[in-house]
Length: 328
Ligand SMILES: [Zn+2]
Image 1 (cartoon, rainbow, N blue to C red):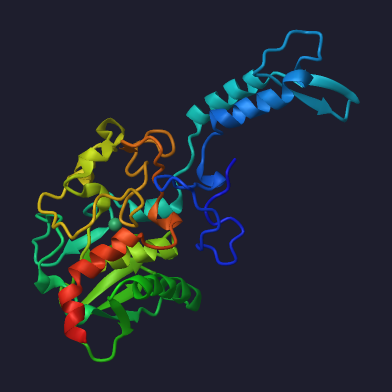
Image 2 (cartoon, protein in one colour):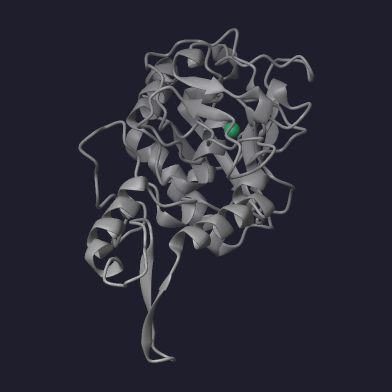
């Protein structure tokens, strides 16, 4: 029954409740699928005396309801409700959110990577790229496609501002630069190329499911040369991939990065580049595909985040140190 990190914040995305345990990520109630056992225990404790007032036998897992229409008190067997709920849950598991559908494209490398600078399609190997694929001077010229509305632009600019606040990389409106990104909202899905591929390259933030600050940051971080946190070569120390729950034929979406270039930060579950726990699941909300080794960790989808982690920013600054230095 805890509220999420951004509860009643004047600016959504600015944290108001920060857990003392740094491994804990607060999750809004609408992203949860059941109440905690501790919540249930508290209900039972609070209602123990009331539930036991009725002469007929009630177990402590029952809860009593007042029927105002009939003017008398009667008891509903909560266990029956729970059973019915369980049956219903199996029959109709939570629908996959559009924001997830847009991110987890089965036909793209790791779900949302269109292509990789300097590598042949179909032979992409995840690695932070060589310096030749970095944006010159740490500057990324951009244009918005005609499909981008002012509302969408505001969201995307918020994402860019996160880079400006924490890293040396700068997104600037394109004037005459040869290499630049074009951000569009009328293509299918959320995706980007990884690194500067030369000339114009697209970043797709589909109006259907991608217009979120977190998604914009995630895709822009691909564009400057980063892959996914959960595909890091050392990820098996931190997460278990449950292939039995992965949609058939999509197991390769979880291939580890064989040539991952270490850029100075350890694994971070909360990285903006980490996928959620139901990525490519055969049953969204039920069958987990990525399970953290640390049981206190709750994975949060990129679209539910509002900023990159400090570790993300540090890696960007490390990777771009030489490029940014050239700018000064
Ligand atoms: Zn991605």
